[in-house]
Length: 308
Image (tube, rainbow, N blue to C red; front, side, top):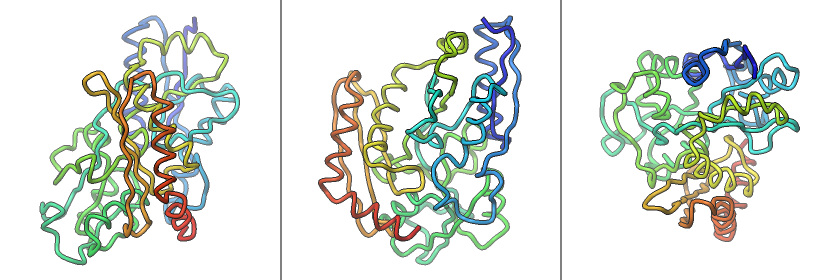
């Protein structure tokens, strides 16, 4: 077994928290193994002044994966929602720990919840999924692009004419900033991004030593949930730059899966739900994707591609 391992990570505050969490977990299970962090700047980190739509998949992961393939690092920690469903040849998701809160949250400058915001209020997000579902709920709002890490977006809310921003609950909770949250969106209101709130630990396919180190970190219920969600995404041919949401939860012995595809301006939102056995995650994901297609998902996704 390795006496020292290096974790590759982005350099944002949240990414470093996530990598440090994995480091602590490894240190707990294997105190004799030295664990180091290496920060790597990705395309998504470099491009700050424009939308990421049109840049393709893996804008927050590609450079880290190259370092992993080249042996510069031994494993990589990602926000799972940033990781495309088609991984580079030779790499795999070696572990998925227990997921944090998967929901989206609204943070407003006045403390008013969504239903009390004035018509025309400006809400910041660069996520097509969030924009589409928000406009479906409140078509009389304005949605403007706001990029950056959690602190940057909160600062933009405070310093500009924005009335609110939408963020992932998991990131805010991990950074201990829950006091800024105005409102949690229910899953049915705003279906989360695939894998939202979960971490993906990526490794080289043939690296059995690293896989052995990571095994104690795996939460197999979360793995089944994520598998169902990523199957929906994979079968729709989408990524994080399309208005697709999917969320699976193990409840009362069953795996419950919801998926949605929206028109980019929120005019149409189709939703599909299915439940089944925990071990049937892939099939459940395929069923939801097929039903979404039958209800017009392809046309809605084409509309987003035309916008992009």
